[in-house]
Amino acid sequence: MNSPKWIELSTEQQLSYLMGGKAKLEEWYIDEAQTRKQEPYSIEEYRNRIRNRGVNYYGETDKWLYEALDLCPITGLDVAIMGSTQPWYECVVLEFGGKPTTIEYNLPGYNHPEMKEISVTEYWQNPVRFDVALSISSFEHDGLGRYGDPLNPDGDLRAMSEMKKIVKKDGILFLAVPVGLDKVVWNAHRIYGPHRLQMLIQDWKLEGCVGVEDDFISRDTGQSGAYQPILVLRNI
Image (cartoon, rainbow, N blue to C red):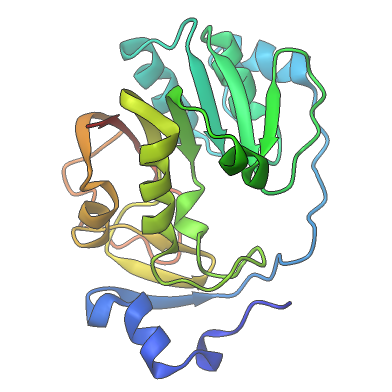
């Protein structure tokens, strides 16, 4: 099913997505409801690049993640990776000594002996809790229909609530979402400012941030979701 255009939403839906006017609207329509092609990758090449502190698609966010992992080591820990279409962050976890498990709606099929995979459905049938989780540029899409997911103005908040059950008590979530002025960029992503960011992380203890600048939640980034610092959150 195709993702709806903004004009096709009811007034009630529009107001819910915009938090009653607290968020601004930008339109950038992307329909990826159909199965996406997996980009070619080389796990060996990824690991070499990570070893040399190289970056992939998310650029500065990857550098900030390395800094966060230096400050909060994951050696020997079980790490859940949320949202994965190529094994870049699985390779990051391996290079920093962790044990990655990808949790996805559609299993990516990496077929690597050091990378576990489990579907979301299978996970909730037999849930286990992880020491650590990574969500890099994932939750901001939830509930917008871009990937064929059900419309839900609070899809991102629901995803964060589920993370409370996936991460062990006192465990760590490394989170990256676009930040700036509160916006819904329909249907590409959300941008998190003083209103939505607080709602997203309110049930977690913020242990630290890497890449955060003084005006990070008041800067107008237009449609872009490129500015994504790393938030280090503890499950309290």
